[in-house]
Length: 470
Image 1 (cartoon, rainbow, N blue to C red):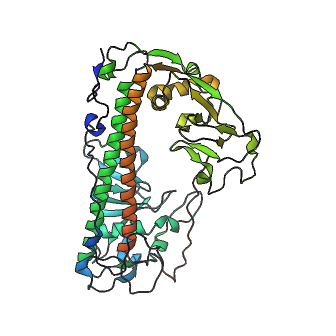
Image 2 (tube, helix red, strand yellow):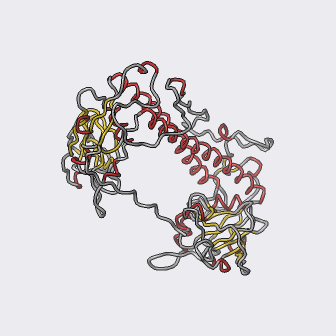
Image 3 (cartoon, one colour):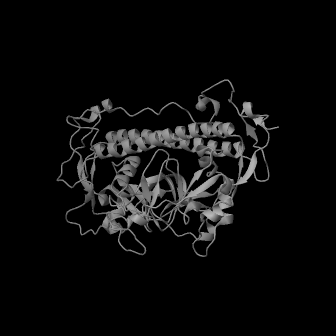
């Protein structure tokens, strides 16, 4: 007999899911927001972070701690006068282990931690700059004994330069923009040494800034752990709330459904109907695409404000989508490109998408969560067709099996998981807010002199444009 779901009561209409689900390590209390009253700068506004720009020395930040208001101007120097940058030492790939085997040391390369090695090159606290590769310019902070490879630059601070403050300065500089080369982008120490930075006049002020940002990083890390804990809990809960392969009942069941019997196993073709209504009159409707992260998304948001109609496509071939409709890209369903229109109505999507609706016996939200299960992910792999690129058209999609309980139990499960989704969304949003706050705070804690010296012949390159999918 399946166990009861913890916290599920047949007499309760609503549940405090943070309590019922008992997520280990995920606290519902919000992380404290850093207070701007700790700073005193006339005219400094937290709402608009200034754009970095070159300016003549001397320089002061827009936001400064009270005890340093009269400490004087910051001094503008080059990175060469701020720190020594030197590449690490080669280590054979065969000597880098994925896990720490005994007394091994972290090994850092151009993109961060590569693994662990028996050798070390440094001991202490050092900023590391990725020197080669698409992610060159990324900055990590290493501590203790570690091995830095030849693809990482180890930054050693000069006298009167605090090491953690230096780490944040290097992060703020966006060093990737100074990379050269296309196939294998890289950074030159000669180029980096010419970049200008402003340095507080005292180590005490540098330390104060480093402590402030380190505390904020600790909040961000704690919030990220909370998000991960919620996601892991949901994944484990789903494995208990849906039957495993070959079984007809889940391991966990809400009390009111303990005696409801076995779930019925059916092909998706018996609980869904394909829809294929075309925009034959070519009427202008909002054009949408399906994203594996956000589901139905206005196409103009994905393609820089220009949708298919504005690009001159024949929208009479597009499919008309109404409320409560599912749609997926048959070439990308394996990466989760499936969406649900919900209350969206009278929109159009590319004719390449497969659209369907559920029968009255199936709850839409229950089906949405089913699409996140390991069973469905495996079934997609088993039913796709094609060579280099795999496709799952509706005919094969309809053959995938699903186990269904009564409609009432479907809705109970869907409500539980949707509430957990709400917690994850809120926690993720708070994480993004903390990161945005840190970015704006850093731009105000450091003067706007970040960039190359005017005398330096430095070539910059733009970041590669993000890949887009129709």
